[in-house]
Length: 235
Image 1: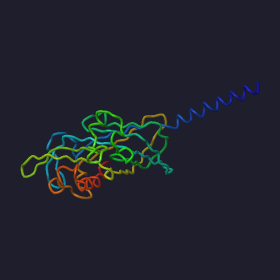
Image 2 (image 1 turned 60 degrees about the horizontal axis):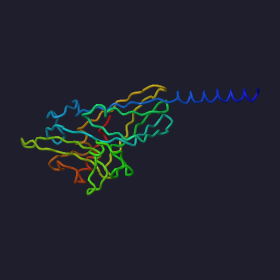
Image 3 (image 1 turned 180 degrees about the vertical axis):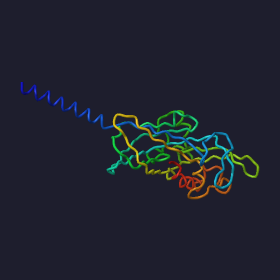
Image 4 (image 1 turned 60 degrees about the vertical axis):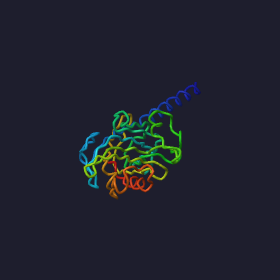
């Protein structure tokens, strides 16, 4: 009888522990939106002006986010292995989902626009249409595009195309946001991120489509400049 009681007590304790563990975690949905300074992004509309003085429009914006880390109020960083492909034209790709995040207050959010060296290799990601379309040519180093930002700008009344393609190891953008947010247990918590596209072209250095290059893919200097400017694109 005593053995049965002990076994029953252990089972109760185990169930209680499991329940507490489940109650101590929540999910997080991160909604990503886009603007150009104070204006909402509208594709194929020449309604925007970059720091160098050109009016421009955007026809494409797609990129990867990875290496997420969330620092709690005790200083512990909770990481995620998720890699997200985002396309600003496709709403379903702009909601990022995280599960099993310990409940509590968080003070910092870390992530990378692009991929680290372990993932930035040809065929390292799952073979999907999106990942295949983001491939970086093997003859230029292989791996993946971290970002494709394309459109047209006006130069001396001439409509000229631009393609800000970011890739190659060393050009991923490391982003750190200080933001107090709370993960509540057993709830789907929400957080909003906004990309200000004009930040790619103005801070800390002005990017000029003519002087710096309207096509960045084979221009390491241009990609370095874009990567440095990208640190402040999200809030």
